[in-house]
Image (cartoon, rainbow, N blue to C red; front, side, top):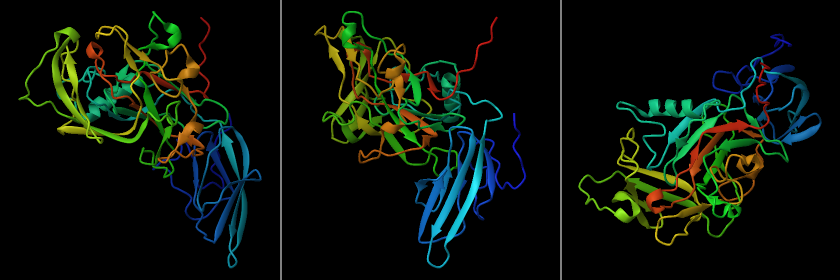
Length: 397
């Protein structure tokens, strides 16, 4: 394979656009060599009234600075035009996009944040051990869902989230799904054609590392699933959970297998309040034990409840799947229904945005719902895959 050249190069990108790599801030060079699916942050020193960036003759940006990103190997001609009556500038240069020296993984390589809401699987998935800190729990979450480990983590009740990324930028390929996420949803057996069972839909957010610092502090965009524009979906929603009051009155509900009905109180921004109960099946603490604060607040969109007690007296709940666009919403054997298109991204006002790719993906529980002995609706996930990276080949025995 061709080696990267150091001649006439001011930047050699080995791990993508991050804080360890200097940006182009003294001008534009004649040639660059970068791996595919990694960003080259171009920041010319010259200024003017208007700017035009062209790649292979096509206008791609009118901003002063431009991030070059290519999914395929090859030579790309880039032209910068600075339109100014005093100091016009027109410069053409080549970017050689090469195959990465170390093959990219199609799976999660890093978990940046793990901030679950309270729930019956919290402190169990992953398991909290005495002395664990946020950093050690974060490491456990990363070990659970990175690569092909396939160990389920729970996000708890509404708003609980995890943020992860790959060892490269996931490219937005027009007309194709770009990544897939595994959950633990299944269809129930009585009426499987209705696609109901254990759907616990998680909303997906994406972010493009525009400041190239390698951390998820850029603008976030929601992937607009099937329910985004529904009148039943609430946007700009927030909910706060409170640490259990040690002096609360313990109230049991034996019919629904609950031994602490008023366990964790919550209040939302519509002044509605409720509780996450503790059930007899999970006796550990439900409030994240590594969190020191006495309350936790989450923000986002809120999907309508999707559960139906078809027994009529709290013994058989069915959680129905939404058509598309959510995690843990359909069984894993339906890959297309668990895959996501970056082109679904919308801004905070619901306007579509055109992202060349994403570096960070966030999933959060999108429903605020309690189903008797089943407990709170909580999104679970175990793996994610970039659909544009070939799976590792399995050698013949």
